[in-house]
Length: 135
Image (tube, rainbow, N blue to C red; front, side):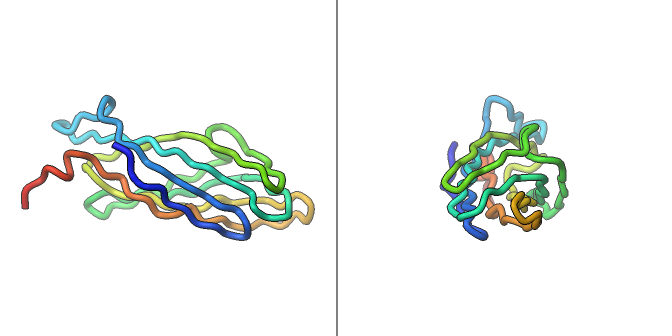
């Protein structure tokens, strides 16, 4: 189940996200729900940038938020020249049938040495189990 695209641009860096519910890896009866998300980072600016670190806030349906930080993404710290794009896929588990994620990429502009943050848009994690619930 694919969701819509979520996108935001900060300082010429456009981040687009689409999440996918992974039914084959999820076990709703055991409270295990898994999503993949595909991210596209496009440098629409005039300066070369490098993604150094990331910070994610992952919130489940009960409002519990987990902070995840680390170097780069999927083991890389990509350098993006003007006009270049980097795409990757990752994933997250939750113990509720829905939630959302948002975050920040901590970028370096190698030419000036300046560090700046690029917003990762909030995106929802929705499963078919959530849509079937009766209230």
